Length: 261
Image 1 (tube, one colour):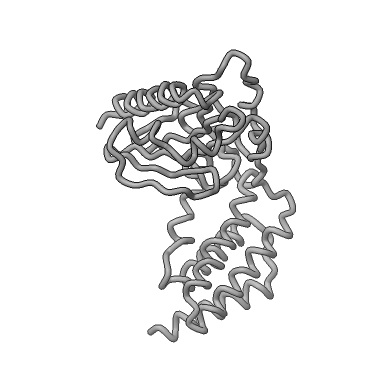
Image 2: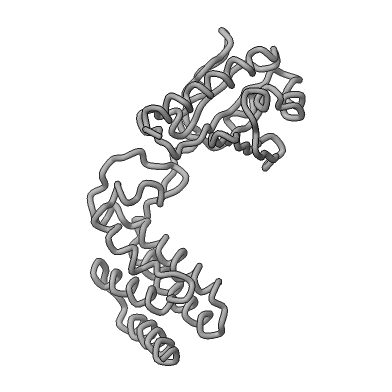
């Protein structure tokens, strides 16, 4: 489906939700987040991320009975993933990730800037302002590189023991996360909807030159030694690497590769 049609479909469903929750008489506002707050980036893979602000004393009613949502279109699946938040999938492919809270709870929930879809006249729209700016950036290079190298070594040791899941997470998640946090020191960032919660969101667009290294650094469950060597190569390209740790990691990775033959 064309992106313009998908965008229209999502926004139309959001408006339906807004009108439906208003009709309950139990809500004060509906605030959109994510791509439906930043409408220009809606595409075929966007979901409806929103908060319903309940009137005092009506929050539980809106949580326990979500007919105001399920009555709009056939629903394939939904579940309560927090005490006041649902994830719901419509059969037509629209996914909703939402919470139902009261005014005084909004500032307690970490969120980026929201877009007010509907609110009562006396609703304080400053509640849409962000409560979480996020900071994924690491400026202590020695710490970041040290953590990455340590994660590589620990991961390879676990791979050698047959703990491949733990190895994969140490090498292809933890080590890389520490290095990605230094991205702003290695390459100019292209400003493109930076996510306050997840540094890996839209990384390929924000840091295209660095992203080219990722396929070799993340080779999968069975290829931890290969991934570790590629990450080591990346570290050596951009940072000063301790020769002892370089040798320790490279020797262990190559030893594991030799055993595979």
